[in-house]
Length: 265
Image (cartoon, rainbow, N blue to C red; front, side, top):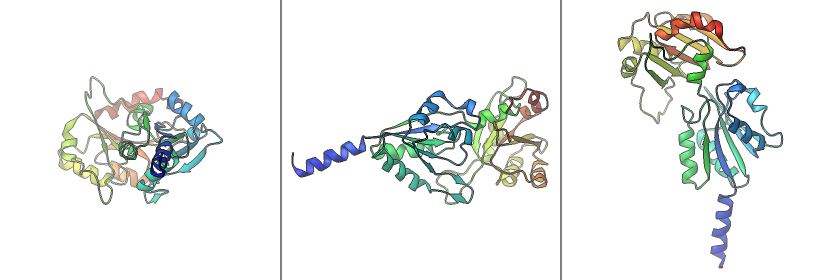
């Protein structure tokens, strides 16, 4: 074997040393975390976690593991996305079990698809471990079923976060308004006035019920119930802030009945 062959072989060994697991942490309640995710945290060498992962789930991490905060919150990024991806690639070359711990589900508005694509291109072994997405769990904990035979037979999940320097198409709010009976909006609090305006211009009545649920499935969960015509003023009056899920549609009316049966947080 010549020197170049030896170098290439060494590179190949380094590339294959570790594996990255994109793990969905769920919305916050540790009881909703998957068994597979928990097992990976307990044996991880490195855990690179997001801002919205709850303290109860972070407490499950192997005490000997290296913990790195890669959280992104509005206006405050611990690491930019490219840096996070490069960090994953680097750690996979030196550690056996690298966990990328993401709030909710990695493939639902979590950039998991982008990170996985970059890791595959870099030759890094990678696996996704799905999590319970907040768009399903949070309304459930607030007593709002997303479908109900009397109210809704379809659901649309949409991001309300229109980032600067967008890399994705604009949300087509006119189509969203008429696409299903229930609309679930992730990360929409900061753009709520614009979203409400667009949905109303598309034909939704200002009397359409809307629920905002903050810190859903956690002990600090809060709800704000209103309609499209009042919700912006309600948010301003109560200083209701992110992170929150918005649910729009007649299913919100069930909150006053079903919220009595909410889980004990």
